[in-house]
Image 1: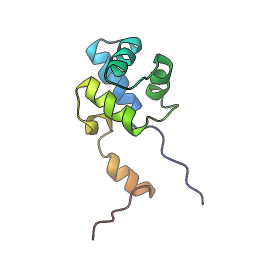
Image 2: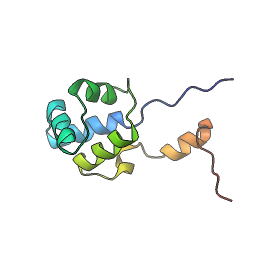
Image 3: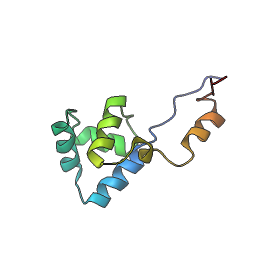
Image 4: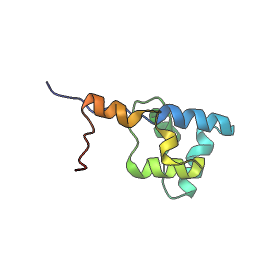
Length: 93
């Protein structure tokens, strides 16, 4: 059975934290651009809606601009969810 990639896990947290800050998508997109990563409002909307995944650098910049640790963008128990679905396997011996 072929596995599909996991959906965007950070979108809901990005939206929630952005709203807590009282920022529009336009404001967050502008702050990301100032921080060095051009994310359009449309791209941000797709990330928040979990239609589009965020790249590594986008995830880093979003955490930086939102002033949270990267782990705050992922749902609680996310590593365990990945392990249960077979996406993450411990390689530590």
